[in-house]
Length: 329
Image 1 (cartoon, rainbow, N blue to C red):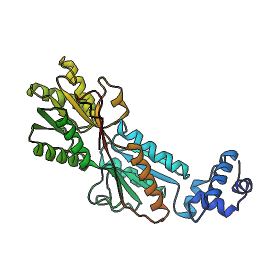
Image 2 (cartoon, rainbow, N blue to C red):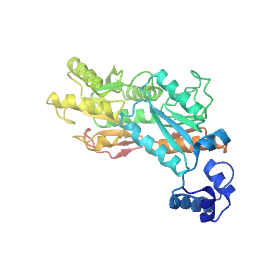
Image 3 (cartoon, one colour):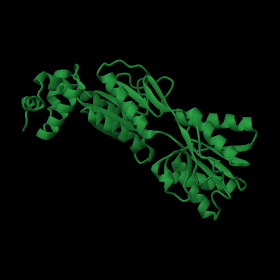
């Protein structure tokens, strides 16, 4: 097994420089980082993280707690987090918390006991669990009390969805509101409603209580039984849109000729369903990447210029709407 001295010798730097690189403490030049990284790979060197943790009171573990990893939006976000942290020598602990406070608490306990460098989560836990003293960044579902957060422009996204519906000639619109527990979907909803009111078009509001596909399907069937004249539906996520799309197909109605659909997120699936889904693009990978950079700076006591990072969204028109307007920004 290779030693830290062998890594230093191969990289042509001192042992202390290699140590600073591994523990992320102190300055290491970009040139030295490249040499050390190559030496570690060539020698297949594995730092003793447990020993480093005991010595430095901080391990190279970072937690990523997500509400539901089966939701297709989150894997791309996780990829952005993992790729940045791996480049910096960190290991990711992925937690599927399923919106359950007890699961969140158990992961936080594990991360604290492991001397983790920090945690990235969709839930700001500081108010509910103040006993867990961890550097934390909230991602996607960033609330007003979150000190450090990365999110997309939800207000603009809601406006773009409503604008796309109106410009596509919608006459009878259903706006499906996402679960009330998430601030981001509430922002999108409020912005959509404000635009539709200003445009003076007919719309109705329907409440969704879940991101679970089968539960959304049941909600869609209930809506279609009650409403026979809808010609456009604005959805809070692409998962919702795909579930509604299946319901429309079962009714032998055409998309977009009879009913138009506008989703939200631009998950990979949205390109491949039939017809391809018009949707609001969220930069999931960039969101994860920015959150990872922020937690890295927090863990290493580096200057932070921007505590709250808001990323742009855009409307991507495909085949589930009638107009071909390209991309709205």
